[in-house]
Length: 143
Image (cartoon, rainbow, N blue to C red; front, side, top):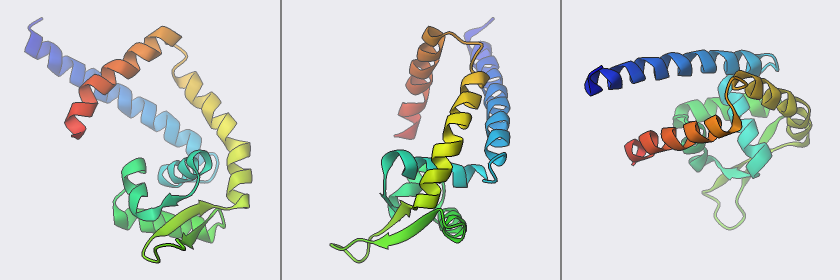
């Protein structure tokens, strides 16, 4: 197979795999009553602590308009709250609430198990190889 054709085949296979994985992960997240954006934001706050709202979009791949919508929804569900920075009133943090922490403590282990099952066909070494190869392709394109 010519190298350029091989690159095209790689693209198709990678996109099909990404779609299948994404569908499975989203279905898992929906089991907990959250959409993927809500889950991603709660996961970020659960594992990394309070985050400036202005910087969250880059971390969970959301536009500012979508992020505001997601923050509003999670605030109504009492899973996060907005907290103004005491040093700079222009900065507002998203902070996970106790209800949000309890929720994530309950569901995240199940979600982690579901993700592990999705990739169970791969050995630990194969997973590490995929991580390194995908970084090699994706990181330069992000810059």
